[in-house]
Length: 141
Ligand SMILES: [Mg+2]
Image 1 (cartoon, rainbow, N blue to C red):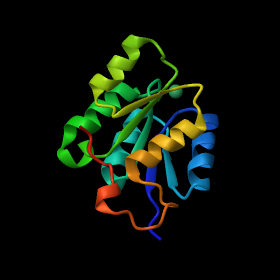
Image 2: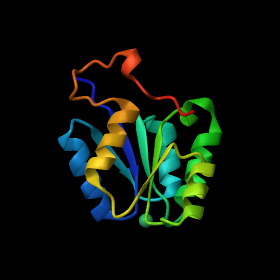
Image 3: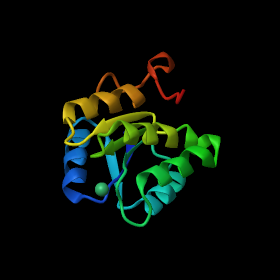
Image 4: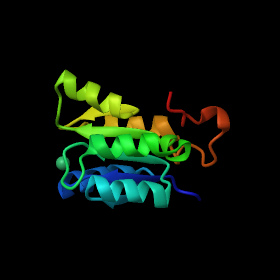
């Protein structure tokens, strides 16, 4: 079976391990980039089905990486991107949405909420294998 691939861009290993645990337990494949610059490169080279993006990171922050991915071309722009951040202020949420994030989840994160969001964007691989075109929600409107 073709597993859905999720790129996690996150500089905190504990957070990555949690995300990896809940997603891999539910049939996803995950891979890691540890800063925004590596995240942009991984997005372009690996074309994941979805990106989970931390905002506060060394080298290049998540806002910058997101806007590069979303403005580069229509192919990378079409990858659903969930922002993951401790920045819970309204201005930070707006900044994430302005950068092109499709959804925004605050830390400390609720793993079930995160899984639900991932399922919604790419379709849950455990719910019947092949995903019908009608059940796929990959648009980034
Ligand atoms: Mg961070």
